[in-house]
Image: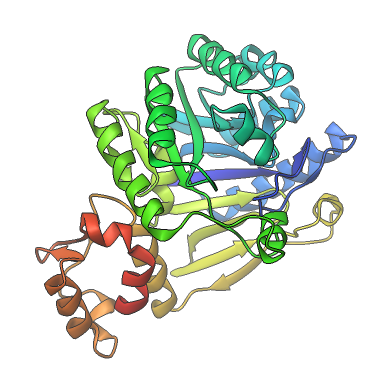
Length: 370
């Protein structure tokens, strides 16, 4: 399987919780961006011959703010360079502003068939705290409009906000589920180093939710989404049958994906090696013509760490048999047995999975296991 991720680096504003490679929106030279992106795509197409794309994902940043014609040109280039598998998933991220909502039909006409909306909350006061530039009513309108335009729609919510009670989250999540989408991404608010929120917390301006409330909110999310027919298939992602994100599953099942756009990462199998790839981070450097992506061969140990870190996020777990390189690590079998005995992992000799409790503590489980 093979996917392409396209990073669009610009946003109308930088949210205080965001640590992505993003910049405030500037005037865009469509031809310069088309030349850079198509050059990047062509480079990788020559190195991945005889393969077809399962998915194409425009992320960022706010890629729905890119020129629609540029989005169309990238889709057309992917079709020409690789060709798409039957029923490919072509996703673009957008915010639920009125300006972006007006572009939905044009994006669908360009070939996008799945929309990912950065809603983040259905409460105006929370949206103000999160630095968003839309209101809750606008988010509801955007979700409704998307449902009439795109084959599939998903949206994100952030929970465990400061001063948000469990009952508050129960009510908000219930409203979200009532909107009728087939996929939801529910993320606990985390304080990333170097963000505005990191500085605010360090200055004592507010205090993150405590661990007990975070755990309760996580459990409540699992219960409510399952009851609504959107059970969790990954730690933060919930979907109706057939509506799982094909592109994100490439990451979690450790398949190949090509990253293009400023600062984009990729994982590509080539010449018997597994390569970690990255493009120049700054847009002005990416637009220059005198670079090639960095390509770092991953050791067997690197690959083991990545496979487990991604694969155990999935409820179905990951393939694991006795011949796996994992078992060559010192003490690996003893650590695995201990985590199984503690009720954090399950293994039947073919697949390894985190239990419900293990998923709640996954970072600690991975640290112990690896």
